[in-house]
Image (tube, rainbow, N blue to C red; front, side):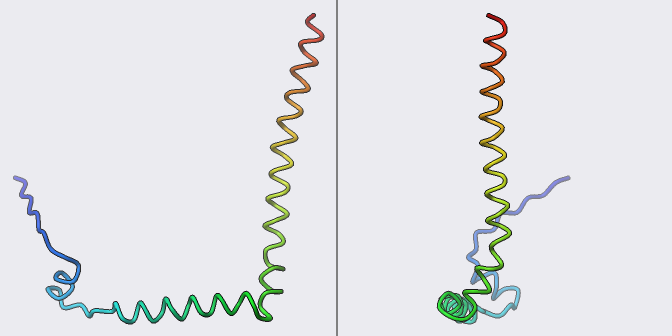
Amino acid sequence: MKITVDVDITPEELRSFLGLPNIEHLQEQMLSKTQEYLKEAGHSEYADILSGAMQPLFAYQNWVKDMLTGATSKSTTQNEDEKSRNE
């Protein structure tokens, strides 16, 4: 036996039904403070730290790009060599 119940309720109504607090105002404050902090981090002494922390990521991206473009150009060169041998 299977019973399915569909409930059409808003998140606010469900929150009050379950007795949970409304933290929407707190979420808005936290979001605005986080945005302010991130804006300040780009213009402060943390900018050097953040840019230094990103260097390994940039190096990895360049390595992957070189590997992919190198693999593509090698396969193209190998295909051309094989075609010239077959002729």
